[in-house]
Length: 182
Figure 1: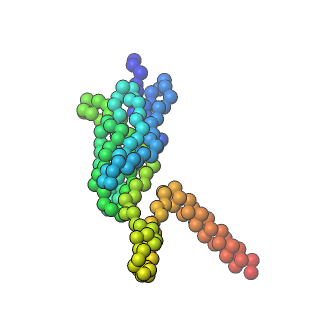
Figure 2: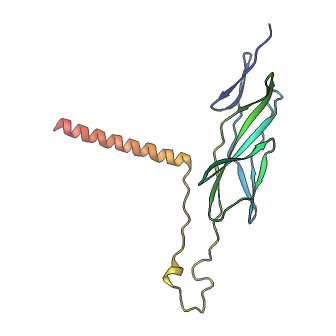
Figure 3: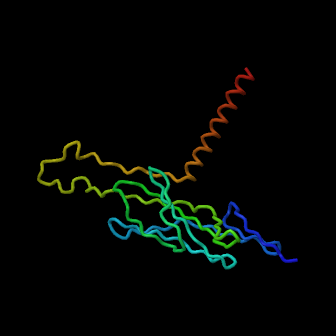
């Protein structure tokens, strides 16, 4: 009798399961972004070691206002992205997949996506008063500056929701206790 080995997808990453060995998992950190020039951004992420000799491939997704798109799938650990729109927010996330061969051909076992990384393409506006000398002052419309929107991470949003639900539950308990006692 031979020793059987199976692969499993666990919430914590790509896993290799064997009856005689502990579970090996692979998860990724958020990708790192480097602004190359005015219209190119380099997205880089950590590489993972092959699991039992099986190669690792990566999926890179971009999240915009229009949805989520797969922009890269392959073995490299970096990707140059240059299709930016000015005054937009982009989030990048990556996941690792294990490619292995079966009688059906090449199969892929994917782990979870990494946390996302934010990239903004806001225009740089001159500060107040710059370039306005000799014009006799600023008009009210010139004094208004567009404030950049602050992006909230998924973890922060979840924390705010949990706190909100807890406050509502406490308020409901106080109201119910007040009416039952009186």
